[in-house]
Length: 259
Ligand SMILES: [Zn+2]
Image (cartoon, rainbow, N blue to C red; front, side, top):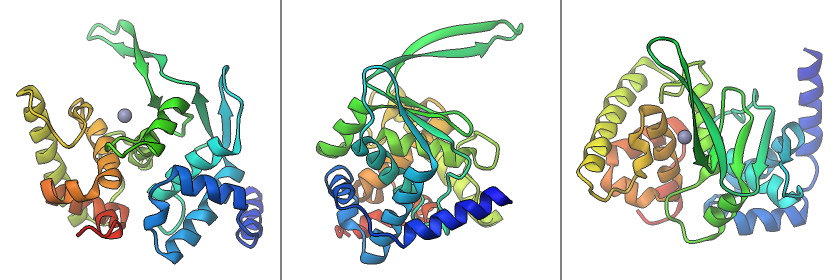
């Protein structure tokens, strides 16, 4: 209770302060979406960036020195994802840890007999319930500054956090109504199967075929494409675009002014 009161007080104070000009330059150069937002959305995004930076612990691992560019770039994309919701949706997240580049993570699975199996793979990001979120800074910079290719690891990992808000990690984030939930399940399951089929046939797809790994990854991958290649998604996957638009309460294709 006291913590919430202090947080609200700090939020009000930050919302009344001017946004640091050097941070604005970072947002403009590292978040291509900012230029597409209307004035009201820009104000909300900048406010949420300040709150995110003030409330989350953003750390770096060996090989990096923490900069404002790192803090603001992560905060901008996380805040973009939550822009359509009444409040920023990442209250439970405590920390973000930046790795210099691709790193090796350990996956632990249990086989039928209960035996724990450990395997290692190369990663550019990951998250767990309530975090921390891990991100490869080298890949963040490449994806945020280069020509858009539909990939954005920050959006991907924070989409996983949205999926986890209701306690289940199932590729279905919390919905507003039973009807929205039914439509979501119907559309995303069909689209997921389509991606699995196309991937098995060796065909090229708009969605990253990593999304064919599971319905959980499908939601994170589809979220990346929704923001990064909205026009293409609206043309090639109109029903998927519509359920994501309804969930995120944002219309990136319309924002980019291409439809
Ligand atoms: Zn993922």
